[in-house]
Image 1 (tube, one colour):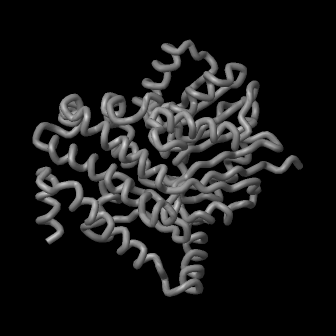
Image 2 (tube, helix red, strand yellow; image 1 turned 90 degrees about the horizontal axis):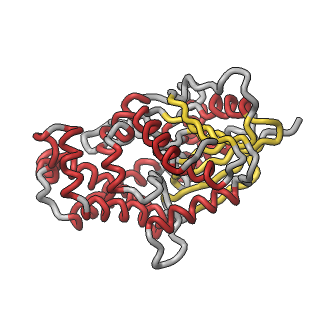
Length: 349
């Protein structure tokens, strides 16, 4: 039955309200699966999950993740994302906020919470299309900003944007996070920031150890991740309906809100904030609206990426992805899956 329905979906024959209803059914199934028999069973399973992460690589399936999202031509994101190319949750502070307004509001929130200021040395891990790296470099011209991306197309885009804006205090490194090390002999960083990259990671213990070695004593790590309020789980292809894991999030992790707090051997938590999931639902709905608005321009881009015989299917798949994200974070008025922001500090001694 699932395969038959998926074929109809791929042909763009199923209306959005039915797709959204199906997404909600899958979300309820996920909640039922992750409930391991009350608080005792769930916590025991969670502790095994934490220990299991410590035995894995820092990141897995990095090539697949790169292909799924970050080597899609930049033109696709030009049409879909806001003006800053922020490919992560934005902050809709007012009922009439636009996507561009919400991107800017989230940047300002990061700035305050991460205690960013001029004349700092800042490292961004997983810089995406450069939205935050460019914003920080422009806002703090006395700071030196380094962004790390696993995608050459992203680096090319970011450096072109930096040149157009006259930004000279930004450098981008293309590297797999498993192998990344700052340039030999370079000074330690005042700040490390990471926006929706930790969800692609596994071994947080090793990752935090490395980050601590890159920070100055008293330096701060600021992390933005999406989370489930209680459950942590892997995105794994176990059934034919594990569509997100197969096409968009191979090797991914859904952290729980408290997961990172179990990895404080080298960096200590200073503050922890929650952002209601409806902000992400609105962000993804805005991406979906942009995609529909620019379908005529986007279809040739999709055809160039996936082939003429697959263009309708992949236009639908990207719409499905944005609808799924919207439904995920809109569940229970944004109180089930949401966004967490964390500030960790490297001890001064």
